[in-house]
Length: 326
Image 1 (cartoon, rainbow, N blue to C red):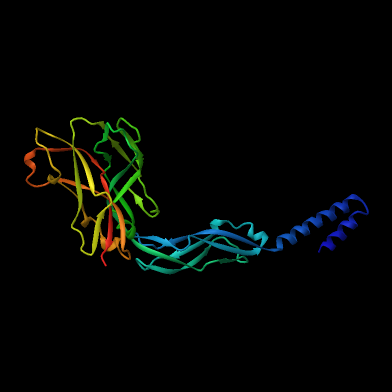
Image 2 (cartoon, rainbow, N blue to C red):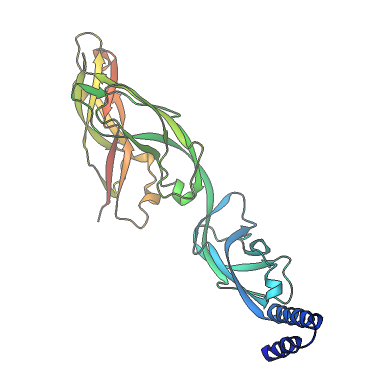
């Protein structure tokens, strides 16, 4: 073919200008035709999408979120192909709920010439489909840093105190609270009032009704306050497990009316184990650690000492270690 073009151009060099121009134009046209007629290849990275997924379900795991589509055909046709012309779709009309299953990837093409062939590098995908559930979670602030010894942290206020979490059942069932991002109070001598983001950690499939909460951290000088060091206990525990607190003692700063004083034995500080779904949390596990909020109550019969006005509880949450009994 190149020799043919060379012959045309060579002949155009002898004679007047018009034949030369015509020869050059013919050479260009023929070269363009040959180039466009060549077979080429084009690759697209396309996302795997779903169809017919029931409204009360969600995909909590997928083995690969993208596939490579390889297209072959004439270059002139490939130029017109765009990413929007190709889709990799998984039909989830009848999914297996709660366990891993292999699903076929369907190739869908729109406005692609018939002469172009399209192949996907993967014909199937593995995915887990779960029920989509909701749960009300308590917001627990994460306080970091130390303040001067003359000051203490009062009872922290959060607005809203609870948020609604939506996500796969296995994820939502494992949650009993949600933390805020860290709030550093190092060296502060006045109240902290701040909008703080909620900490989703690695739960990419978790949707929250709020992304931020308002946190008020009172910082006050010690005055006529009293302190109690009270051990925290686990209530309503399952006999198949042992429960141990990393920080077993809670500091309670309080005000009281009159001369009566409360003793550590007058106060009940506890974590209610029934709020945990141990059959879900400890499935295929022998041990686990969780950060849990504490509950504080005056024991029956101690009301005669007056009203217990709690100013501060340190810490407000404790780390609970759960170990399966042999």
